[in-house]
Image (tube, rainbow, N blue to C red; front, side, top):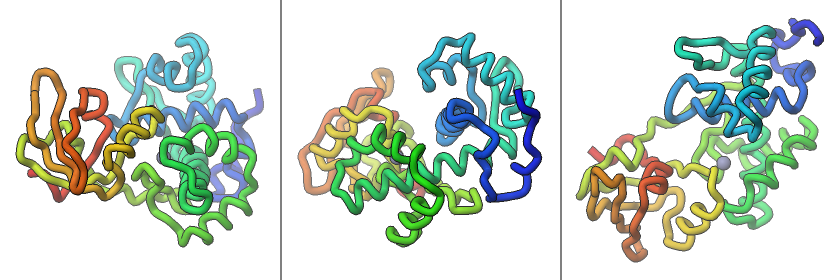
Length: 239
Ligand SMILES: [Zn+2]
């Protein structure tokens, strides 16, 4: 194993030079897991996200911790170190800019871009990514409402509120939808639930975790608990 490359601390110059594609996937998975719901994640959850066994994930996380990209927290959870965050932000920026490009310039649906963008972002040069950024006018959020880190790795994440915390009668504007399930995104899109849609909670069933909502200009729709937990509204809305 190569020793940690101190050039990584030097800023934007080739921040990925030292890490394998697999290592970057782990850092990205930790970023994704921690972005909206928690600031730490278990290795089991990382394993699920990366699609490997828990023992494989543990080994990888230990190596990333040895190199200073990941910090061990209490109860077996891990979080990104400042150094790990810098690399993950770079990976996330590339991915989300490519997702945005596919939707804005090539007419892809928001449910079609995740896997395509993942492989394209791996292959794209830094020059291509920066040209996409300029072409799109330096977007700050991707097609699913996730913030796009700037070229320096800084993120201005909007304050959002999960739909699950809203009550019957609350209204709001959709600001983010989880992008992990293409079929769900397609369903949302077909029912008019997209970024910046206005929604009103018609009925909340607290113990089931389900909701009936209306989307401005569209019919009412029933959401199961997974769907409810996949939608965020702007924080100023909804109570
Ligand atoms: Zn996205």
